[in-house]
Image 1 (cartoon, rainbow, N blue to C red):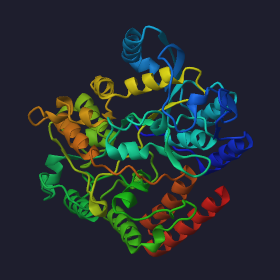
Image 2: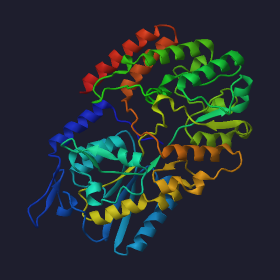
Image 3: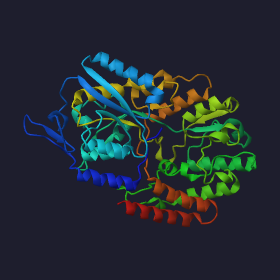
Image 4: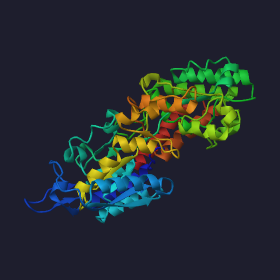
Length: 457
């Protein structure tokens, strides 16, 4: 479950829209109102002081595409909160979370109708923070950071209109990465399942062993590099973009060309199905049929195999995705919970947001059998649900492995627009087909990425 990505062109449109809206926070005169993003708000909602006010009144809580599957859970959370605060009432609404989510949310904010408590992804939080529509949580509750893993709390900062990073979100739920593999197929190829490689090139070397042993009867992995860019670059600590995000720099690192050369070699040698080079399919089906040695890196994949292919599940092992040069796991940005600075009952909204994201409620939701997600609070990750492994069960092993790595994971993953990512992937695919040298493909990929980044401003 990853946060959705926003194209650079759309992001630019939103930025222009917000700028024209008269964004930012400003305090009013003593005893008067203040403004947040052009909307009149209570004075205590903005500025540096701790938020004041009673926990009462009616607030609106908006999630993203969760009501259908998790109605019972969230209604229970709401009832518990209302019982603890008799004067408070929470109305729950659910947004479909489609491609227009950020634009529609910005429009709500500009109309001063932003929900009091709202589930946002990183692009939406970026736009709303820049315009001053979200509560500065560190200022309004200096203790807000305490429950969360430090790296996730750090990820919850976004720049305001002045360029200052402020905490306008509470980290909520996240995913993780790991190796999943068919132990029998690895053993046949002379790869020790008990010793996962520590580098990506080491993993590629194992792919090569599988290709030579399998001789087309099965494969190591899928070919489409879209699953690996920029994730592999991040794990190798290759800088994909410049610090300001306005230009591509990955061609400056010689390891990028080595990576492309490896991909081309593996494809040529049969480590990957030929027809998977441009396919958007992940390894789920072929892995469940015993035809691919390495499965998806998503922890929920392990449960998928357990439910759909018990015989392959019995041969499935899990291991640490190579830390490589980064030296620790890389975790995507979590989903966030924000409080609208335009709320008429901001104290109630903040109280509910913190209640929703506390360790008890995060742990309870992660235990729901309908979902495979991971919490962002330290206490939750230490809960026996994540730490106790049942025998040699791969799924419980996967939960503990990911929970442990999330305690120190790096959350600063590179976010590429789909256009930029596709431009890079297309050049790598040409190299894998032997139509370009790895060196030329990397050079051309950077040039095309730069062109798109320049167009986006």
